[in-house]
Amino acid sequence: MKFQSIRGFKDILPGEIEAVQRLERAARSVFESFGFSEIRIPMLEVTELFARGIGAATDIVEKEMYTFEDRDGKKITLRPEGTAPVVRAYIEHQLSQKAPVAKLYYLGPMFRHERPQAGRFRQFYQVGVEALGTDRPAMDVEVLAMLMAVLQRVGVTEVRLELNSLGDSACRPHYRKTLKAYFKTHLAELCEDCRRRYETNPMRILDCKKEGCRAVAAKAPSPLDHLCADCLAHFQQVKDGLNRLKIPFVVNERLVRGLDYYTRTAFEVTTTKLGAQNAVAAGGRYDGLVEELGGPPTPAIGFAMGVERIATLMERIATPTPDVFFALLGEEALRQLLPAIVRLRGLGVRIEMDYSGGGLKKQMGLSDKLGARYTLIVGENELKSGKAILRNMSDKSQAELPLSELDQSLPELFKKP
Ligand code: HAM
Image (cartoon, rainbow, N blue to C red; front, side, top):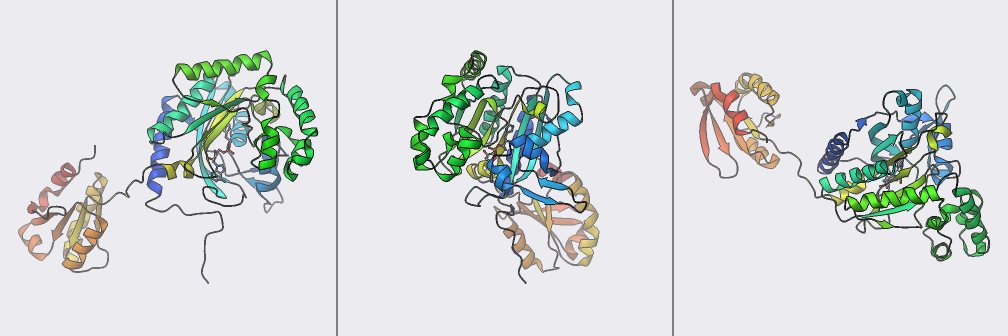
């Protein structure tokens, strides 16, 4: 029997993982400089959290969740996103008491049973942030600045920030009515999904990708023309703030997110380099979600970055190679050198060796293949003289190195910046 990974679930191998690691490091460093702290949320939550949080009529909740009963008969779901779990944790641990604004970030896998294709997986990784406790437009600007800073840090600069405002509980119901009245006269031109959305979530019709729906949506009333004075002022201040920071953006009035919790600011960062799955990060404000999930009224904003998609856009980073390959000839050499190897590794020297007991030629071949910078050769003669041979693998020069000085000379030679 030959096993294969499940469709939509993939291994991230050495050679691919380095970009992911760099992205995660850059994100941590940028987020922490903005005063955000990491939160680790569980992979599983009760299903109701997502149904309520993301919205029962969304694609995610209707068709994409990995939901099952555990052995106690409880209905649980593998998290399809991180916002609802973070809000659950915020309420459960009363994080509002600890600081006026809870600034949290998270990294990890999410699960959605979507149709797999290039850039779309059923298990994928997100790096996300959530700032809970303020509705000030300055926070929207900070969060966006932070997102763009991470992308810049990893060299992903050919992207477009698209921005919209979806209104709030004061103006959205009125806009929804206007929108429904418009779509009512075009129902026959809409796809089957959108005819259903007309009843459940008419704003989603605005960003349907199907030709017919796009033509109808293009002439639909814009959410921006229906914002109340407060939402309009908020949106203006977000745009002003971005301009002051010289962060380029385009307003996209058709941008509607696939999760129901958004209010006011909604955004997506897209690229033209990935084909259909062009969103590398997305997010927005969700001023009503904490209350919806049983907490005190708490405005909040956040985003999540698609790790695989961003890693694809990054330059490939080489897998780390050994600093030095220890070519040990014979059991005695291995026995005597092993303590030094362990000590040196503890000092940060990357050491590789041969585990099959091969001869010098084979070991030199392996050292070459692994890309070691140096090979340290120790056989019977070297043990006797107390001096190893250190071979520079690029210029093939060799020098003697007293075995008693390995602890000093090797860490010095391979000092990392
Ligand atoms: P989302 O738009 O569903 O938002 O996902 C954010 C990003 O995750 C997407 O832009 C994309 O890069 C990546 N992504 C989503 N689905 C897949 C997939 N199947 N395969 C690969 N990558 C994928 C959220 O999840 C919100 N929780 C973001 C947020 C945080 N809003 C406020 N706070």
